Length: 177
Image 1 (cartoon, rainbow, N blue to C red):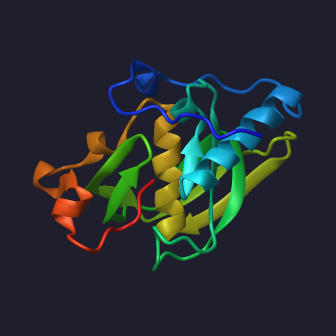
Image 2 (image 1 turned 90 degrees about the horizontal axis):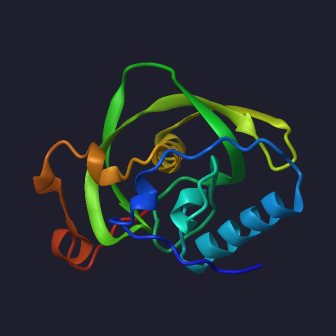
C-alpha cells in the first residue's frame, strides 16, 4: 500500500492514549495494517504501533525472522494485534537496550517484564492469545506502550544509559523499535 511518515518524539500525538478498534475486517482497517507493514518493512523495524503513523487506534504489528538491525534476536512471529491486553506472568524483569522508529538514532536501557501473556484480536476480529518471553515479550511491551502514549525513554531508570547509538556503541549498534 504505502510507506507512511513515522512521527518523532516531541509530536504530541505520540503522547495520547489510543482508542479501541470497534469494527474489524473493514477496508479501512486492512489499509491501515498494510501501510503499517510497508512502513515497518521499509525501516527494518521489529514492530510499529498505529499512533506512530498518526492513527490513534489500538493496533500494533510486530514480527522478526531475520533483520540486520537485530542480528542476534530470536524470531518473533509476524503478528497483527488489535486492542491488546497484557498480563505479566511474574515479577521478574530484565534490562535491555531499546530504540524506536519515533526516537531515531538513540538507544536506552529499559527494564521490561521477562514473561507475559498477551491477548487481543487479529484484523478480522479473531481472538489471539499467546504466552511469550524474552525478546518477543520486550517487543510486545514496547509497541503496546505506544498505545498508552508512552515512549521508551520514559521507562529508563538511569539516563546515563540513554544516548545516541553511535556514541554508546561505536561500530556496534543494537536493534531499535
